[in-house]
Length: 310
Ligand SMILES: [Cu+2]
Image (cartoon, rainbow, N blue to C red; front, side, top):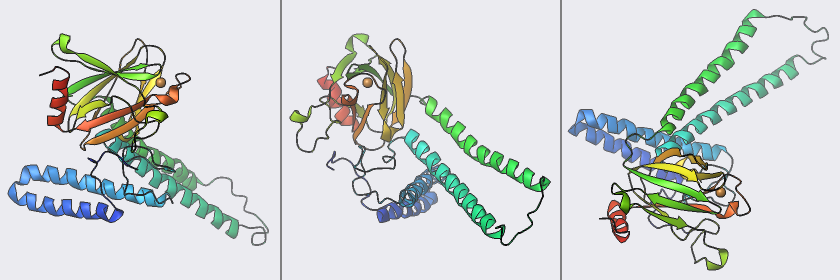
C-alpha cells in the first residue's frame, strides 16, 4: 500500500524488538547525564517499548500474520487487528485491549481445561454412584471472589483510560469539525475572529483517483495539523447525525446538530491518518472520508500563510 512517504515505521517485527532494546540502552546513557529528568523519560520510553512488544504479541496470537512492513494509518485488506496507534488515546485503548485479550484467553483456557478434567474424571463408567454434594463453602467463595477480582482488574484501567480520553491537557490549538451530508468542513479559529477560516473536504471519486491514492479514503482537502501538537477537536453537524472517527487516533465522536462534542489528539509522526464517518447518515454515508495530514511545524506555518494567517 502506498502511503505518505513521511511514515517512518518499523519494517519488521525484529525492528520492534531492536527498537525497544535501543531505547533502553539510550536510557541507561541518559541517566548518567541527569538523573531526575532522564528517569521519567526512561520510564516513558520503556513503557512505549513494552507496549510495542505487546502489540506484536497480540498480533501474533490472533493467528493472522499482519504485515508490519506497511504499518500505516489506513485499513489493510483482511486486517483484523487495530491500526497502529498514532495518538496517546489510541495507545491507551490498544494497551487495554491487549490486557483484555490476555484475561479472556486465560479464562477460556481455564474453563476448557476444567471442563475436560470434569468430563474425564467424573464420567459415568468411573463414577457409577455420583456424589450428592450440593454445597461447598470454599468453592462458592472462590467462584464469587475470582470474577470480582477479574472485574476490578478490568475496571481500574478502563476508568483511568476513560478519564484520560475525556479532555485534552492544555490544547495548543483547536479545529472545529463540521459534518454535512456528505462531506466535512474544517474550521480553524483564530484569535482575530476575522481571520478564522473554513474549508470543505470532499472524497475523491473513483474516476478522479491518482496512482497511490486510496479509494474511498482520499479527499480533495485534508485537515492540516502540525506534528507533536495537542489539538482540541470540536465536532458538530449541520443536518443529521454523523460521527467523526479516525481509528489510528482512537477517536469516534458523534457530530450532533445544535451541539458541540469535544475530543483531542496529539500525533508524534508526520503522515496521513485516514478515517470515515461512523454514523449511518444517509445514502452517501460511506463516501465522506476523513484525512488528517500531519506536517512539520514549519510546513504548517507555510500552509497558514497560504490561508492569509501570519
Ligand atoms: Cu456521515
